[in-house]
Amino acid sequence: MSPNTRVHRFDNGVRLATVAMPHMASVSMGVWTAAGSRHEGPGEHGMAHFVEHMLFKGTPDRDAEEISRQIESVGASIDGFTVEDHTAYQVKGPAERFEGLFEVLADLYRHPLFDPAEIDSEKQVIREEIAMVHDQPSQYLDDLASEAAWGREHPLGRSITGTEESIGKFRRAEVADFHSRAYTGGNTVVSVAGRIDHDAVADAVAARLGSLAAGRPIDCEPAPAPRTQHRFHEDDGQEQAHFALSYRNVDRHDPARYAHKLLNVVLGENMSSRLFQVIREQRGLCYEVQSDLVSFADAGALQIYLALGPANLPEALTAISGIVEDLREKGVRDEELAQAKSYIVGQNRISLENTAAQMMWAGESLLYFDDWIDPEEAHGLIAAVDPAEVHAAARSAFDADTLCSAIVGPAESRSHLARWLGR
Image 1: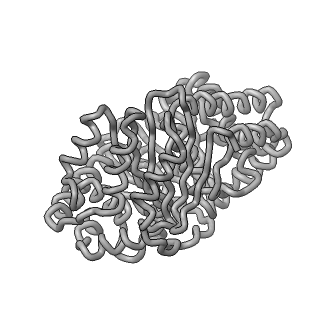
Image 2 (image 1 turned 90 degrees about the horizontal axis):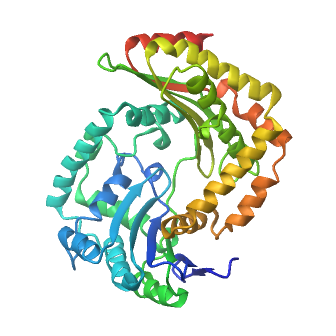
Image 3 (image 1 turned 90 degrees about the vertical axis):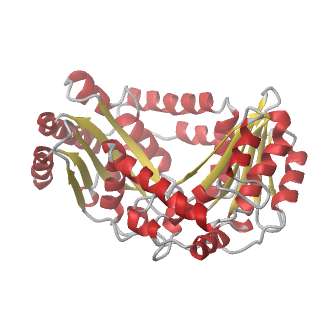
């Protein structure tokens, strides 16, 4: 372990990681719960995200305005986010203000009021958020792609925000119950990076979160088996077609994950990738094209996103087929692999120069692997991947039996995609 990084485990299950960066003027801190949208039970669609919103609405010691003022009056910022398998609350501010900032962060995490009037008010805020997502094709496509990949009946396939109908049914007792089940010591991770002292941070965490009930891990449904599904949304007012293709992929613990990461870089993660060079640069068919990996504890997905005029869709789909088939048949070239390795390592080292990225790395390491992962150790595992492993990853990843798709755009674009899938 790096001499600048320390991990501590409290008796109630809270896990703490600190990264000392004495040359920085700032501190970034995060409090995480290992509970997200996939941990929602029947009747709880959107609950994890709703609870996240409600934690900013006040505690017995400070209302929503005071939370914002006490953070921002010292030049700090605060935010939160919910994803499928965790929820996080983060503050970045001047290092000398750590104690006061962490007090506010721990207070909202532990002691939300869940005032019924605020619950009703926040329902309307989230309704507006849902409407905003539906008005933005690229964001709405994410929901459709998840639904296609995991099934609308599975929590992984449902929108994180919930629906107007689902959140409309939430009552205070149900919101408080989810919080009590999910925000326990055993589910909680704290990560802090910046100009800090580990012992001082540990004392602050013990004082604010040391009495948090240990609780028990919150259950979730296993990821469903792969299936071929297609989700379409027609909108004749859209000039472009936004579509996604999704293949089932390895989970975040699979030893082959590094080979799949390199495969994704070659495929479509940056401007040097095959998708970008062929579809945008050489053929001029689109403005935006990329691929991405989604990883969970028990499953993953490799997804391709594209936005373009419907008339260009048939040629783009043909080009994608050619790129995918070539990777399956021939694998990657030596120079491509070397460049992909340098890209991943270089991008990661650059990002970790700031306190927020170090805090995120430490927090996700504890959440996902229950320990801090040395970035250089991960870089070494990337460097050790050989072309044969990436070729094997391509043969595994591009399995037509797991191919799912989603599209938002004019009816014409749906017809193009349906014909391509039929072939």
